[in-house]
Image (cartoon, rainbow, N blue to C red; front, side, top):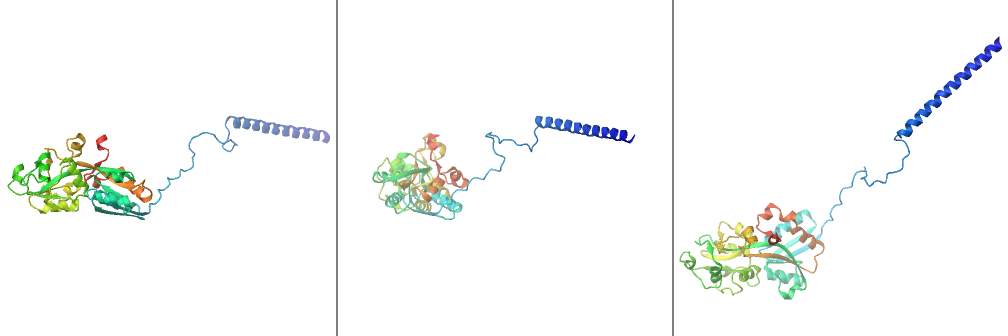
Length: 317
């Protein structure tokens, strides 16, 4: 009896073991089937060869190299307000740069850069032929010029011929051009001045100025002299007209006032291209400064626009 019971118990035990093993095998098979259909995140997968951007954080753009060194610029006093403004802004951005700006007239600017006395020569007119082969011309802006008179002068407009006759000494009294009976005082610049050359070319048709009158070394001095001298006439570029608007006024020329629209349309002819010359290609701090003064970042600043200079490519638009 006991032997039978032992055999029966052994049979039941073996049956239980086989049943458990079968269930385990079925479970494993079902799990493998699921894994084949949907691999788990821990599965070993080869890296993708896609060109899609990586999920890693992008690196920030490298900072522009710091500008260091000294740059000297001399010449045109007409262009000087713009160059001085650019120098101040540039040095604020680049504390280790030193930009020194002086005047002296366009002729001095060209001579200085040609002889190495300055890194940049500023000029209202093109350099003379003797210097052109060694200089690189950077045309920065257009500068409108105007004939200016003392506020007490009762004249608002001159024809080109009337203006030429005044500056050549053929007309010496304001009554001859519709003004009061008063002697005209001419205020002008020295021979080296680009402003003088510009007026000589455009208004006087390259005829000679009168030797009478008062001569001033800078555009600023011309504006001040006209503002403080009764019955006087002179010529400056626009920034100085705005600066001394309480003492001087700009004349219309052939009935047309200076403006970007009138220059673009060809109605107003008294303007010049402003040049910044270098001896050979600019490098280092000089190149960085020239790039800045010709950049939209600088030229579009409201305080720069207010100076009255115009984009160098205005006539191409």
